[in-house]
Length: 207
Image 1 (cartoon, rainbow, N blue to C red):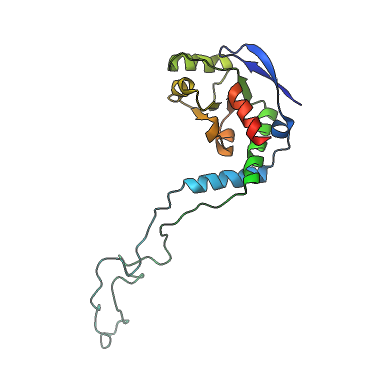
Image 2 (cartoon, rainbow, N blue to C red):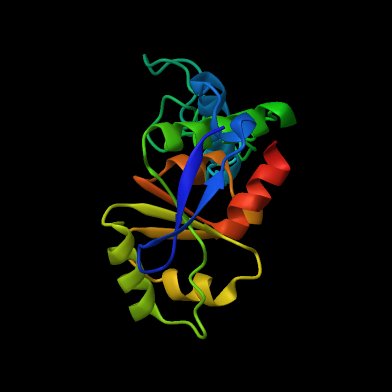
């Protein structure tokens, strides 16, 4: 069972935590992580793109010229696909890009992401930020004290509103409540910061 330091907002060690090996000590499954992230991004796509077929473009109700006697190829409408301004053949139409991923794979991907972060020494656990009121200035100071000078994701407890409001406007910082944690959010950063409450919740759900 791996151990990790628990720091306070000033970057000082205040405790140690025993990490659940089933969540933080597995061999990362890169394939499953890729599949889950791809599914997450696909579900985010609006899929509202649309092209008009020859039956939807404007004009073309009249036959272009008579069928015979002109020496030119016969044409029925100037809105056929080979005409400029004509309809599009096999163009995109509104649809959903979402595809389903097995629930066990979703959990495996999150465990793989957390294990990879720990192995790469990109995981920081904070006892709590304990803001009495929202303060971006204090949040920036805490990031500096923790050494988070690169793209950072912070996962906090769902009811930790002051911390969420303090960090949400800081550049290169993505803060999410633990109930919204997913594989993409966990890996799309250079530093992952978990509060002790968020760590406890993640182990409870994923173990």
